Image (tube, rainbow, N blue to C red; front, side, top):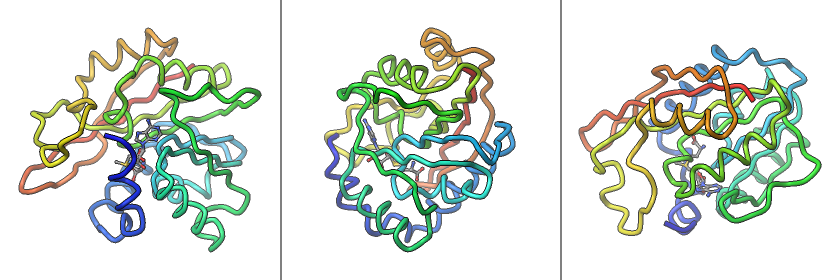
Length: 205
Ligand SMILES: C[S@@+](CC[C@H](N)C(=O)[O-])C[C@H]1O[C@@H](n2cnc3c(N)ncnc32)[C@H](O)[C@@H]1O
């Protein structure tokens, strides 16, 4: 659906208490499922305003925050300057559906929260994650369980996934080269009277 929606909402993204609560729940689930070392190089893909990384900052090493929305990247830059996100964190303009996988980069952990349902070519992005991770590195993906399409009912140009079937996503991850896939309940999102469950999928490269 392009970057306009996220560009427009970036400046007020953190004002929604439900967004902040959900990001905190995702971060807590990642911290429980992934053995984070204080030295781990972490890539958050589709970082938005960086809420998940913000909550994990004390447990990780060098941080890279990637997003294809210029509005979101502006907020990330402002938060780094203000010390809300770690000083020295890198902000990348990156869309792994169309951009080449960055060369010479390696991460112990790649995380992605509520992003993959916006990705059309899932296989290309998962393969890119595998290439960016060191052998044995962890991927942690939080996203919507399969839903009836109501989540993006007001987004006319939405072309992504109506959530994911956990078994199908596990197969996609294994096909992309990941092992030890586990999927657990992680959080919920309340939207217009409906509760949408969010899972956390963790896998090893
Ligand atoms: C629903 S928001 C989630 C933001 C943040 N991860 C969180 O949990 O609060 C989805 C984010 O993914 C980004 N995004 C969507 N498609 C993307 C793509 N193909 N490449 C990079 N970022 C993408 C959007 O710009 C947006 O910041």
